[in-house]
Image (cartoon, rainbow, N blue to C red; front, side, top):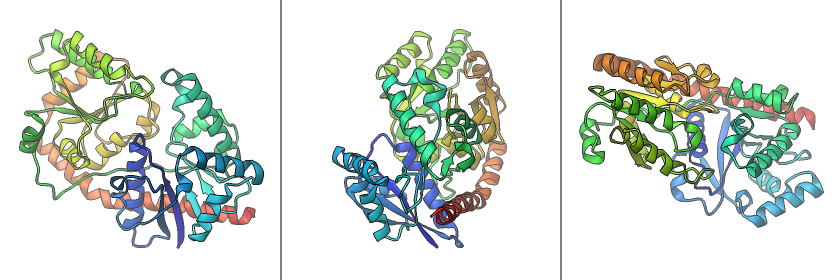
Length: 394
């Protein structure tokens, strides 16, 4: 058994990463034969609700993982002088941490190995969605990690191809971990009546759970709804969206999106709920006619993984990583083709069957425990290899 540390900084914008770690830690803890003991290393200022999804895992706190200026200066100075983040490394050694996972790089001379995670290369593939300064900062950080870390963790083979182009040779030290997600709750009695009472949703609906970032491509769905409304389609589908209605890189994006929905006549069919309790997401997932992910870019889509775990039909953009994820009930549309998106929604709504949907969800739900253990063991294999390789190198 090795103790593996996962650093959790106090960052309100890190929702996706937090859910990713919750899924991973829950999977590890579910394996009765695990050889990895996860330890959460939290900034003392981390809100308690950020730590509620890690039942059974040990939690230790230190300011050494905070994003404050003094801590960053201390780490940078230590790296420059010693080639290692000595204060954090000493803390980890005191708590018998054998590996720092997903959370950064301790330095080329560190005696505790790190397994940094590079979630995706969106800033390289689609720099138009970032400020120039952020692209430059990400380039510097990614290059430093890719060139120096003894092992790297990626979420897809698509990302491995990007790494090979970005830092040639680094891909030979990389490991691909396809994460899974599953919020299936078989004991949840809440149904359509709950959605009507709580959110005013009645009748069939499609569910689009992505954050309102520009690259998530909500506009494609709005354009599709606008086309159907303009054609006088008898049953224009309702699309329900959740997620924080803001994009820090493009502050005007959400307002412009909603202005566009009004302009094309899609507003009555495009319902934005904003941030809602996490427990309510599973109700929306289970009772939606289908899910939608129209994104221009993903590292490895949680929405698609939820569709796989719940056995739901999903309309998704035809991009390489979505093909790699390969949901059984997936229907692909080009990310710029509103006509194809409109047709996909109409076809799925017309042929939807409660019996078929229920049967598919039952099969997928039954498969979740085995998929979760497989995910945990894939990670365990990579973590143990990283520790072993570091031991040979010292």
